[in-house]
Length: 155
Image 1 (cartoon, rainbow, N blue to C red):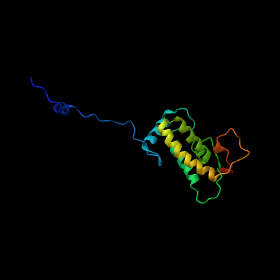
Image 2: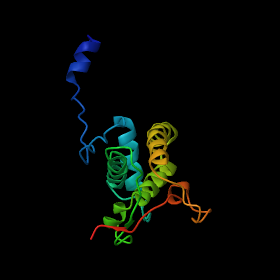
Image 3: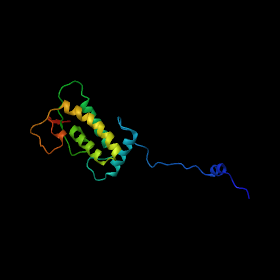
Image 4: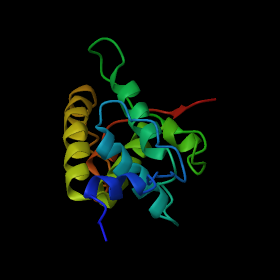
């Protein structure tokens, strides 16, 4: 009884197609696709987290960059959000945006954590250059909360 050759057997197989449950998330500008996917997974896996929700990292990174992209060399003063309890309004305060980014870093795998940390290191350097330290601030707060701010942003 003759046998089928390997090519003939492979031709009989039905092709396996992958079906995605969800389309891939949009790439976060300035980060690799792999890191964007890791952030997307971390946002979806961290249920119960106040700061992390789908898309929160992208919004926080955009807000942090916009604050630092203010033209000129004048000193910048972060402003408190009018409604800091709201997840959407809380990002009006750039310090809250930095809190979101810090929490994201803690939830990422090592390679994605390293890439996001490098990006944040560059932005943090500019933040330190453009803001002034607050000598009266609570010394137990993160360093970005210990910068001079003014008033409320928004309304």
